[in-house]
Length: 75
Image 1 (spheres, rainbow, N blue to C red):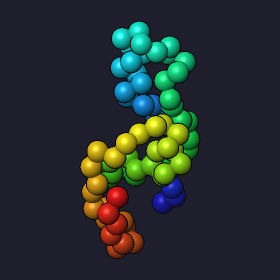
Image 2 (spheres, rainbow, N blue to C red):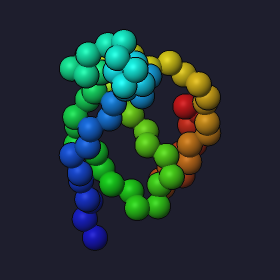
Image 3 (tube, one colour):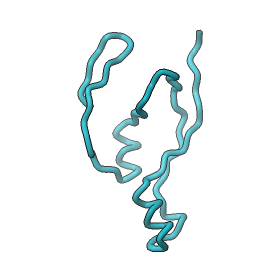
């Protein structure tokens, strides 16, 4: 079996709410388009720090992540 990739767009939901309410223009909603590895068993999207910063996000919660290779990380 090979890897499956998909091009996805991720947007800042707070910006989307502000645009919907008319406080900012639609074209000011921060978004990033990138190619992601698809994991059909995943329940959470993981992004890197560069995308996190481009979207202007803030940390709400940290979780333990278990990788297929046995590694465990706190993210």
